[in-house]
Image 1 (cartoon, rainbow, N blue to C red):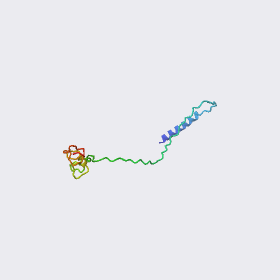
Image 2 (image 1 turned 90 degrees about the horizontal axis):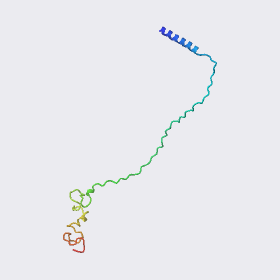
Image 3 (image 1 turned 180 degrees about the vertical axis):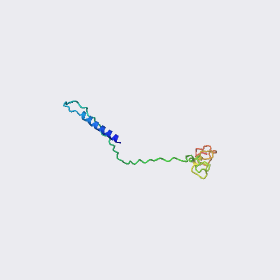
Image 4 (image 1 turned 60 degrees about the vertical axis):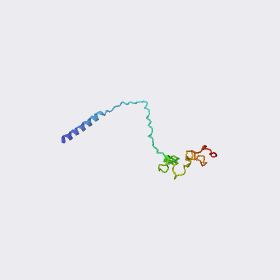
Length: 126
């Protein structure tokens, strides 16, 4: 340990002598005149500004509901689901007008069924 300390002390002393010998007093003076390079302009960093919050109420949307059961409408549909078409269903009188043009109906409503009527579209002739 002592040898390491003495070695370090010797290195410091030699360094001091080397520094003292490097500093020379000189009398020569130099002047330098030159054109400096222009400075560099750096733009400032962008600043993020959060936009104002506002609420816009959306316009109401109306969607027409789909038509379910369209196969049950009209004289040939089956509204009550009993297997009998609406025109033949005796419990439902809404589609009786569909029977007038058929052979067993009375189109001109003169009292004679169409199959026996010579002029089924003329209510004044039988």
